[in-house]
Amino acid sequence: MAGVMFSFYNFASLIDLNIGISDRLDENRSESFTILFCDFSNISQTLIDANLPSLLRTSDSIVHWEHYYFFVMPYTDKYGCGIVKRMIEELFATSIPSAAVCYPSNGENSPELLEALHVEAKKLHHIDLDCLYSAANREP
Figure 1 (cartoon, rainbow, N blue to C red):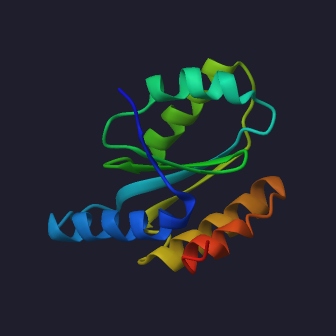
Figure 2: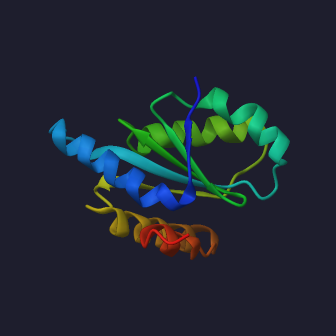
């Protein structure tokens, strides 16, 4: 088991791809995929690299910007996302600031989902994810 890494500047395209797949499969579910944000600023990079892949499926995608990690998890609703978050916290033995949004309940396109994630992280943890505007605009 291991997630696939994507460049941060392909984040919006990755979201668009997951939206397209969900729409093509005519998924009639309230939450076709979830984007989970985790702030790993208090975790060593070596520990992240050694352990994170063991938690994710091959269908999951990983995007990161500095110590912020974003996971795109197909066929995962908020309940399933909560289980993944608990597994991450158990693995690293610490509370991890996080936020999650789902397609289509929190947005119907990549800019809406990225904005919703930004708002959620700010509301829950006072974390400003301005970096998401670069991803939404596909700016390096």
